[in-house]
Length: 219
Image 1 (cartoon, rainbow, N blue to C red):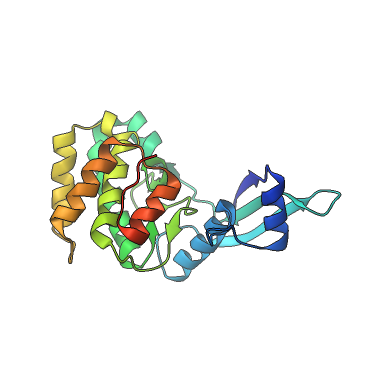
Image 2: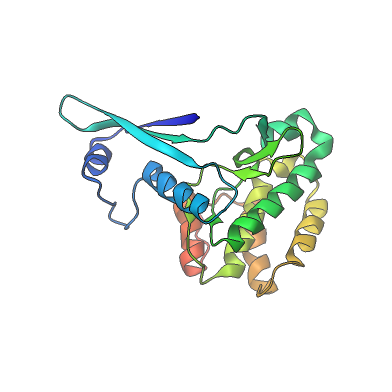
């Protein structure tokens, strides 16, 4: 089993966790979102570790101090970022595996808005399936703005470290090949967000705006 512990640092967060309430935006705090999203993704048959359980500790006042999510341990796996640091000649292999994983998640109605190389778990011997982890910033729903959402996902994957390891034109060619398998994509709307996401930082909350409204807001 793998245990991911996250400290609850502020009093408002501790109160929300203890009461099980949402933030004013309607979301739970990120660790709760991760628990819910990972469990739902696994229920749908998506390639993610299964949730084994969760736990927490409390202060003397009865408020939660930290929150722990327990998932299946991915033995004999390496995250994609460490993989390409160790084997930079295999960067396109990791990109291909990540694209296949991303599109598989999307087809299950799971839209990961933080899928970068380190959140892609690669089987060391090439036998096991590739898995996604860290699903706190994720939607288990069909997007109204599919073209913009996919544009962000593929642009973001380039910006987070991969862009320093593969040429942009080579990456664009891999994206174009992946898009051949996607239906219902408006190329103009896709590329507007894709180009933005490749070259600009888009915060976690702003990524959700893309999914919900199709708008790109730069912080």
